[in-house]
Image (cartoon, rainbow, N blue to C red; front, side, top):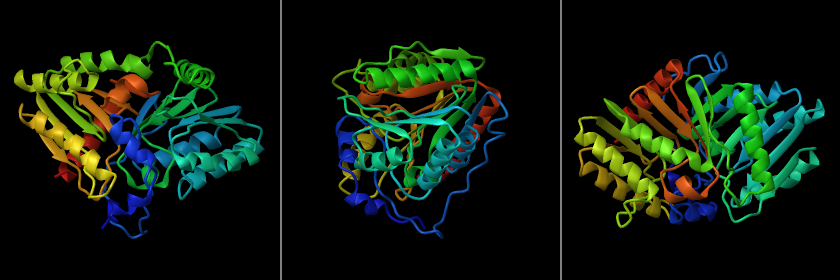
Length: 363
């Protein structure tokens, strides 16, 4: 069985900051697990990289990241909330060093909140990688690898062994120069003015649109309002402000309740951690959300307490959203985030299969 999440008690203080600021940050805890631990069997994504847009999840992130990095010809730009050394991240790090040795320019931009990111900077710089911390008062919650301004991997996965090897995570790979150039512009704007929203308009290609920072809010609300048959949500962090119905997360959860009233089936899976200093607040916030949704007829489950479900996945009928944003005020309004709305048939079908596994596993 998976090792208990209580092992995270000695982790980063930033995890506590996450819950107190409305679920903006990711799980930054160190979770050491055995090679023989039981793992959930999840479906394989369909032909990642064979289409312009491909959905992927869980451990499939690592092989995709390595493929992109090893195939880089000119430049790699990485924007990450967390960079925590260990298994899996070591493989990515070595691939980045190989890229530098063959003449590829590698730039890494990290949020300064996780202590592990501070510790990674000297090693990266010694190996010819241009690495910087965001020292502004903003939070860079984006998780993105951009290669040659034409291939991008983004979603919920942090550069940490826990996130890459053991969590439930959802990500997208996009092979398109229009999207790639927009992501490059986004990365450069973050470096130039990290305290400000990127100010970029969504970029759209066939069956796909990518949102930067605050543009995602209204797009998400309209999508939920459009639901005809079903809504499925897997969310790591939530916050509910009942005294402020116009707060973005409260609006979103009220739209889920409204959907049930008009006959839409709504299913939600939320993160639940075993008891620890970190989890007490997380569990309290998610339980408050669950109770509010259940009162309106929403079907709500929690993941197993020995599993971290860090994915941020929404499926409305035949359209999905994948990205870095939790449903808290920080995610909607304060942090740097990347989120996509996907209607490409194969990707949505894959994500539906993945959600069904999470739903069956949840309790």
